[in-house]
Amino acid sequence: MKLDISRDHALALLRDMIRIRRLEEKSAELYAKQKIRGFLHLYIGEEAVGVGAMHALRKDDNIVATYREHGQALVRGIPAGEIMAEMYGKANGCSGGRGGSMHLFSAERRFYGGHAIVGGGLPIAVGLALADKMKGESRVTACFFGDGATDEGEFHESLNLAALWKLPVLFLCENNKYAMGTALERHVADAEIADNPRAYGVPADSVNGMDVVAVNRSVHNEAELVRETSEPRFLELRTYRFRAHSMYDAELYRTKEEVEKHKKHDPIEGFQNRLLAEGLIEQADIDAIEADAAKEIADAVEFAEQGEWEPIEDITRHVYARDLS
Image: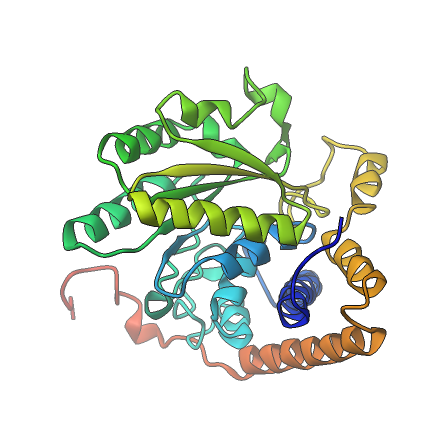
């Protein structure tokens, strides 16, 4: 089946997937050098989800993400330098160096985290949508979460309230088949995740999360329905992460053979090959994108390296409501 997209659109999707992949690869390298500390959850393999979805949403829509949020943050417009500086813990990071990898944030871009608690962003998404509805805003709140979050109480509470109050939330489940190190079929009685929201009267569907065009179209269609009806909808994005759950993860719960099998469906390589086969792009286009991405990431690292640490005098800022000095 032909892709049926414009060359400009194809290049934009490919460019952002490559930007994410190179950012994540460099982050892994810097973590090994102890430049980045704490937890680090890489998005390698899931780029089609973040790029397809973010390109389908409007700039004034709200975004709520998980701790594996570097990709969404980058495509949303948070500069790579500010993301890298945040992972370094520097004051010029997008969260002032206080959030790190799991808490990227930008109020001006309506990017509301980065949430370290599994399922923790779901109630916040419902609250944002409720506020917009009370103010008469025509805005979608897109909430990303993993398959592991479907076990949490707040998942069911959030679906119930969104349906009960008819709130414009688009629930986006990034099903990468593992809740940390627990396979999907080992932590849910019903592995068809899209069955859950239907119990609350929330329309639900699934899409191949390794196909950036399929994700882009599905999220666009679902978001517009949410916008028109001001009611919630649910989309399961079936994907796979090529790296361990986090950089601390020994990855003893799946075989190397399984990972290699899924790598044959690499969302970037597959998309590139389709574009080349259809004559929408040439190898020179890919080379140019790679060169631009390499420079962007190199500049981001330099920005982080040159950034300053927050002064010790500010240690109580954003902790207490008033100055204690």
